[in-house]
Image 1: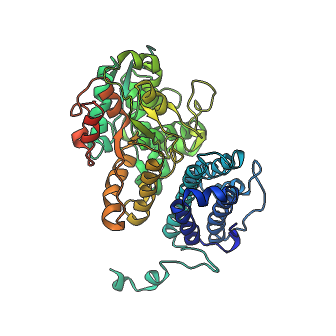
Image 2: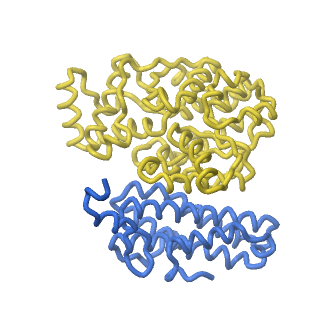
Image 3: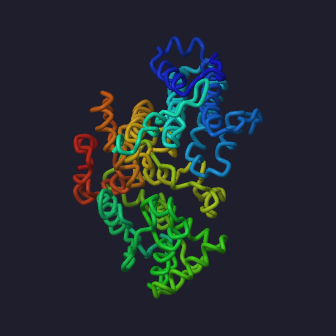
Length: 157
Length: 307
């Protein structure tokens, strides 16, 4: 089980890559735990975005999931954030699919697809952070373009 | 066949005259094949796309409203826009003119200054190419016209993010059976299934393609597209069907870039849904502009007996 509190967006992407690359046997053995990781990973990504924007990430739930509440919080006054609305819901869907029937012969495939959806959320939010000049969020805000922005224009031209 | 959409005004938009020309060609060819009439708007202008909207949203509303005004002047109550960006912007203009007084005032002022009739909300309905085919011909009509079934072709239907968002500008969606869903769109799935395709359950059908990052942050776009392509392949898809020129171009270009820059090769093909539908109707690949696509889908098309 992954601890969302210490995961950066890069951590999430790496973990998603590892799930995608894992063998069927490995995934089937820990199917429920891996599926539950999806929620933690998705939450970590949205927490990174909200924290970088200076908001206090909510602990509330929407339809029983903090992930969906965090998405709703991120989308407030930012309609373009809804471009990841269904991605967040697909994460919940894939997690639920696995929990519904963890012994299904197709569980490894479902877990890989779920990890790819998580990866998409991480890529999308990671891109938005870069666009906003906020950078990846680990222990503190780390604007990836800070050094570039601090340079005199003549140097960057 | 529903008479309502048999003859509609056609707003191709800028992309369909450039990078999305194959979509323009295939949309017109499919319309002709299905016995539908498209009458292009006279002297249409850019819908305001992303560039104008980001700087001055009310100016974008005016630009889209001018196109709706032209449709009304030409005697149409429906305009069809195949491009997701144009479709979205025309719908947004319709919503803003009905609900936002400052937008209405700017539209009136600029229309008077430009010397044309001021468009008022509720006069012209904007539809997408998917609505147009779904509601005029329908699945049964498509099944009757199929000459080369898409049978055996596994398709991931990719709708992109602007076809369903934000929900409030699409009041006709989410109204139950027969209407489109904003959370799980299905019109393209149904149209291509009627043409014989085997749709895969694609979990990223409305996810972002990184189109808005294409110029400012190509690496993010490439990674997003690569994930879309790899996920489609993991779903078993032979083809990703598109309905937006920005998404389509992004998928094609970043598929190449992902291989060059990241060393990750994917072989899933990318075709407009109108190209697939056209070939199912018996049209030649060239007639629906397959040769204009950046990626080469011809080996697959031949293998599936569509050429």
